[in-house]
Amino acid sequence: MSPPLTQIQTSPTPPASADVVVIGGGIVGVFAAYYLAQRGVSVALVEKGRVGAEQSSRNWGWCRRQNRDARELDMASKSLDLWEQFAVESGEDTGFRRCGLLFLSNDEAELSGWASWRDFAKTAGVTSHMLSSREAAERGHATGRAWKGGVYSPTDGTADPGKAAPAVAAALMKLGGRVHQNCAARGIELEGGRVSGVITEAGVIKTRTAVLAGGAWASAFCRQLDIRFPQASIRQSILSVAPMEHRLPDAMVMQGVSATRRSDGRYALAISGRARVDVTPQFMRFAPQFVPMFAKRWRSLLPGGLQGIQGGHETLKRWRLDAPTPMERVRILDPKPCLSTIKETHRRAVELLPQLRDSKITHAWAGFVDSTPDGVPGIGEVPGVPGFILAAGFSGHGFGIGPGAGHLIADLATGAEPIVDPTPFRPGRFNNSAWGKVADF
Image 1 (cartoon, rainbow, N blue to C red):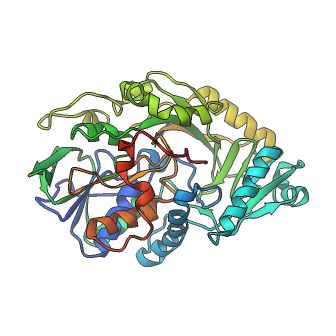
Image 2: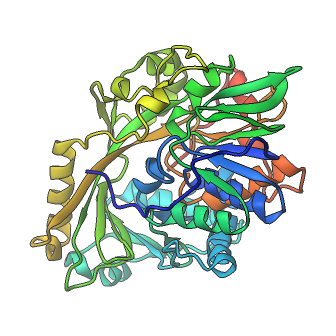
Image 3: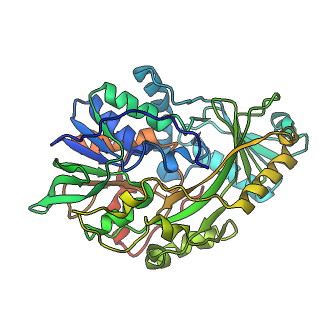
């Protein structure tokens, strides 16, 4: 069952030309297009299915700085401000609230890690409160149990994954930007080695700049241009329960289970880090580069099945540009949730939050989280293909930092001063033999 998602009406016919074409209608793609349109740039966004229908509506909805990797912290900070500014500027509702995020634990090593991050974050001006046992019990009173400690980040918050990307797309269209759903981009047209157009199923859009914000499809799309982009997708399962009489904290994690309140009162429940790894041709090709990441997270990653192959997003095949592609055969990646994970998630949540015992499960879904070997996204112009900007591999962080990433993409596309230092995200780093430190998240 797919998660709830706001539907929007868009034009079926793309323009003959645009200054910039954004490929992919997830949260990063729509924010990139929005900030481009704000600057008077003619922009067309093409989405093979529905805006926000893949991972952008299937995540926790957290917008946080807490526990961010140092390379993403500045972007996370800027994004929190941009979430707020967007609501004021556009009048659209993404469900964003600075509700604060609560982490509770009885694990001394985990608490020590949070304390170390708190000390580092102070140098970046980030407020993060370590909680004593008494304070953790007070903030986590809904659990009715004692905790050794915790951490509370008061200025972090959440947005509603079912509302956010469609809301940004609606604001984009108000600014004159074009959005085209059910319009797959099949490939890139080059002239003299640089981008000259985007080939879609509805025809060619002439442009000098193309942004690929294709999520789990990005690596296969890049392969059509002989661009090597190491990417692996893991399949995560989430459920939601109906609104309850007793309100729980808006966003909390305890003993591996998260609970996040949606704007309609439902609670989304998930096991932190738990995922299935589906073996695919693409996975096998890039597996050696992902050894450090998988070694770090082996306790949370479980063997998968055939859903990755069935989705078609991790194929190694080349496709024709004058015939339907895998993206047209599978408009929306909608994998089946792992039932054992759903049951275990609900069991843990009820054990820790007794108020959930009589709550009804309303939805259960899964999504493919696109990851890079170091857990940090690739954002920037691809070396050797002028005019082709990659924005993918967000490794489960894309929703929260979507506004900052979109702003950075717009900066790079227009030659403006970047909102954050783009160096840690440069796609060229994937050409090196050393992948760097695997992100902590």
